Length: 71
Image 1 (cartoon, helix red, strand yellow):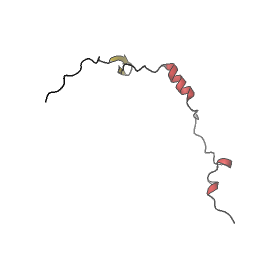
Image 2: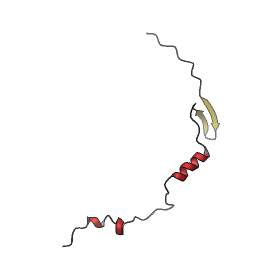
Image 3: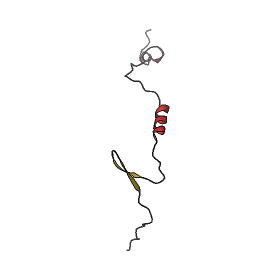
Image 4: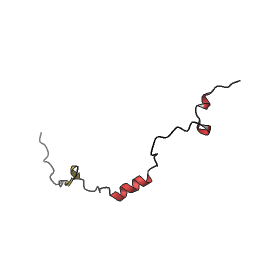
């Protein structure tokens, strides 16, 4: 059985040196710009800065629904 000759027509991928090491650049894929990163963060849902207490009173009190009838 003979194997097909390897296809050497595919050019090697480019690489660039970054502070965290060498990274391979894939053709057709553009890097994410800082402006795109900021847009993603601006469109993300807001998150609280510190832990929130549960809203377990009034309309949102799901525990009160578990009570049995008194009479």
